[in-house]
Image (cartoon, rainbow, N blue to C red; front, side, top):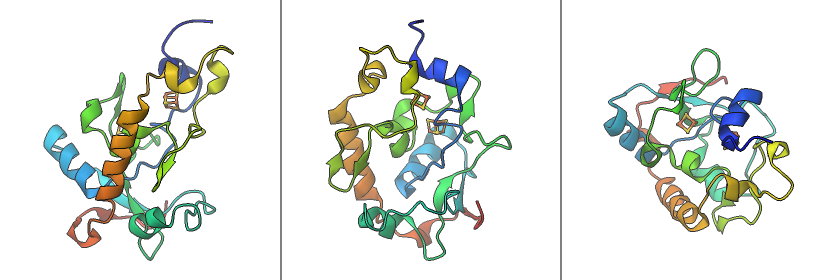
Length: 171
Ligand code: SF4
Ligand code: SF4
């Protein structure tokens, strides 16, 4: 099996996390990205495509602060083919430190209490050799992810009415 970076193989064989995922952004994310990219119109409100997506029981803090009463939340816009607004030919066009917090944490799974032991689903673990661990192959640092997770949850409560994102109710 090739030693090509897993994300590159993922991109050749599958839809990646930058192509198939709604990326929630905090207002802190929006400000950081706006400064870094000079972009201004890159968010909108959409409801989850999967109607069963509901964190009410699993993570009520997330549910309460991320979702508005009409079921939408602030996410990055997508290109016409569904790719993330910031996905370019060579991958993300934002530097790591400029990316939305949830992009920096993925594929760690987490909730209000911390980083979970098992990674989130979604990465093509079938491309790994049996002895390889996903988070190790991707070079993920648990302590760094925990810092980003803590920052994410600290930013979630910032008030919606300061945001000027485009309203799009239907996903
Ligand atoms: S993080 Fe996972 S889903 Fe995203 S590109 Fe890499 S291997 Fe694919
Ligand atoms: S912001 Fe970058 S890392 Fe996050 S989904 Fe978009 S292209 Fe991928």
